[in-house]
Image (cartoon, rainbow, N blue to C red):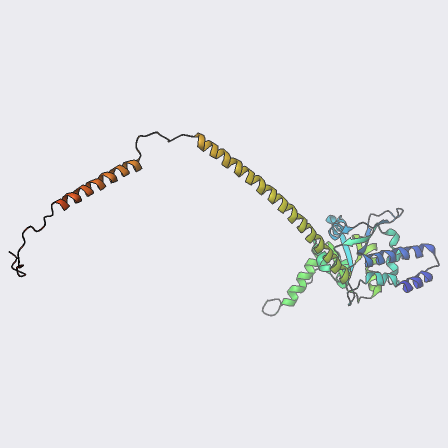
Length: 329
């Protein structure tokens, strides 16, 4: 990459301004390749006399989309060009810029309003097109939209039975969506020709119906994985800290609740000891009365038994021969 950079700088050493433009453009691209996705923003109301604002602060993709969408209420277009990754998952925007494939963008660099070197959240064109009112389109669809901003929906072809085919319905539905859209997310494959990308971006910047243009590159797969791993680690750390804090708070609350319960129990016990409601002094309780009755019953039964034993009489006549059984009388 640096070899290509040296060749490009030597080739453009004719004018100092051109070399500075290229160096800045490549530096932004290389910085984005190393840390996050870069982005160059053009606004239609930009004063050329003012210098380009460079920012290395972390910018969220949603904020970038919201900034680009400002001013589209009057029917103007906001275009976001996203250059996809290569087949090996590496970022391709910096490669195209370092190889000098965007001369038109380089010539329009002084007209840019902002250059962001750290845009987080640009993982795919599908994710960027989730912004309200945004539509994901191709380069050819963008060219047709730019040629006729109002949008002319083709007449629907129907068969002999009066029914339209599914292909025709999809085509006309896509045409209507393209005609109504004011925020276009142009999905540019890495295999696209650099001159086609350069022409599309330059035409968008120069077109009077386009209020803002953003040129950015989708980060490499490794960068996305690293950021997701960092987010997972940060989330786990926050969860552990929240768990420890919650556990500490739970223990403190449990101790306070236990102290309150002990205090309430002591208060209740003291109140119970001092409360004599329903307590009466009597001469005899049911248990004492039952014991007296049982004692009387036992004495009566014992006296009856002893009396019956005294009434039993023994034999007082003795003979030599006992009578036979059955003739005792």
